[in-house]
Image (cartoon, rainbow, N blue to C red):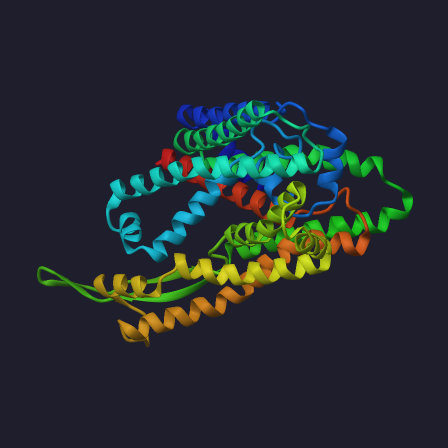
Length: 423
């Protein structure tokens, strides 16, 4: 397997067009990493480290910013606002039929318009998230008190940084290989590994050897499970009816419809984290400003600070949103209609309503293991930290899921491009 991959990679580097795409990706990621090291002014480094060490909620947001949030760089919001706007647009396809028609029925022009709306929606989200984070960090003493002019300037800088990352990500998608936004998140995950490993080595004691061996075994098992579930699918057999061409009759072909166990990807985890982050952010801002209801907000913060309560809620919302998002992206009605229009059918199932009902039942059944898997992946860091007490090198299940998915996607696309050039 490794020799085959090495041959494919050497052929990819020999191909001029593919080599230029790979070099463009590397250059864009280097520019992004440079921006992630430029901090906004007035940051208390020690208070920042303590804040992140004791806050489970900002872990995934720091991943989405590529580590930019942990050092309060000018791209501290990362691609979070763009992901939020994309999620909102996906939800609007359920609420507004016109938006759904624009994405699915108006062809390339409609999809371009849908993407443009997502970009425009990113701007207010970036500004609002910038305001929320700066007020939150001021209340924690991480950022010194700012004058109104400096406050506006910082908000504009972090919002512009997020929009700039969105632009870089789209350029990477167009001129590189793979999804640019996913590659930015992947680069942030990889960039955080040296710091995590050095912290683990610095605090290492011989008594922790069994715990670290256990962490290594968990990491290997999780990687295997992520690959297995990402590739797992339920093939539904499809038969195409016979077709008459002139006087000859073509025999119907046999194919299958693949339904993936994990159709939603990491979107349910982002949904769940966003929902849990809202009361935490509102409570911290209310406590910082000393507004009414500060006592209630403090109780909310203290309750969510309990890792087991937080983990239980996190798991529940991930499972819930997995079913919700799968219902959005997989529509048995549309699939059944397309099969009937193309003269295809599922053996033993009548076209139309029965096909729709059959596909709905299959999707519901196979979504359960995918939803439970995503929920367990999301709370693995909390379980490991609670059982071992090691917080310096906690396995990020979400980060691992994103990293493995991105690597597999890039390898598939490089392999497809090399195979295409060979023919």
